[in-house]
Amino acid sequence: MNAEVSARLELETALRKAVEVQVVLCGQRMSPVSGTVFLDRVKDLHPDAFRIVLSDRTDTEAIVDAINRGAVHRFYTKPLDDKILRDNIREGFRDYSLLHDMPQPGAEVREHAHQPEAA
Image (cartoon, rainbow, N blue to C red; front, side):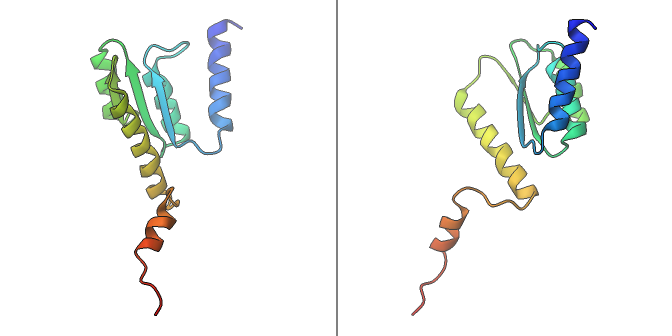
């Protein structure tokens, strides 16, 4: 078995074993598959995961196609603003939590703050 086939099998096995995938961030120029191909597979196995791809060049045709297929939620070219990336990762976790009715960190504190005190 060649190295590319072996790497693809390892990737597939890891994706299938993942119990809950909420956010995936990857580069477009990965090996053995491109980031958009990888995120297509993530979408198949974990459709609710928030998917972000980074690229140091603009493979616009491949990226636009992946976005149109719903495989990618966000695409960024490098270099990028770290704050924007962090905010989008947080957004991905928040969206996943809302989709699955999961409590968000700090929600109990906010909820308690809005409750009137007993007299």
